Image (cartoon, rainbow, N blue to C red; front, top):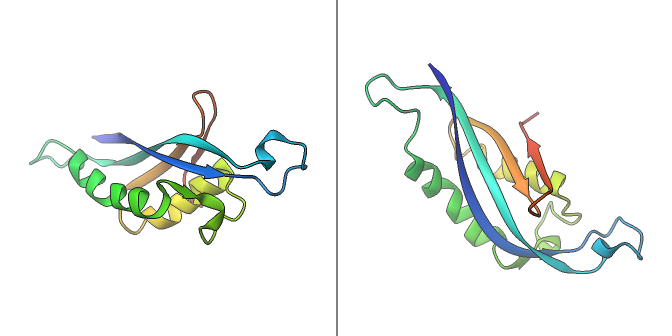
Amino acid sequence: MRVELVKRFRFESAHRLPMVPPDHKCHRIHGHSFRVDVAIAGEIDPAMGWLVDFGEIAARVEPVLRQELDHRLLNDIPGLENPTSELLSVWLWNRLQPLVPHLDAITVHETCTARCTYRGK
């Protein structure tokens, strides 16, 4: 049986979007309480009855978020000089894909009503 698991994470960061016009509100530095959904997909292990332990997902994702993104200015991180939700989701995919087996999608929630999902290349 094929399933998808989703584990949600949070981090706080500031950013500005340097490519928008200077009078756009996102041109100014501002912060977000980002939420990130990490989705993995695959076949259930018949012996265990699950795909992956949710704790194993957290053990691989939380250090990246805490050490590299949380309470940072995203623009200062290499590869995130223009930290849109789209580019942040791709950056997270590239960073997490080697660490998280069965990675299927990364969804970045910038606000309560706006999100971006990236599913790899």
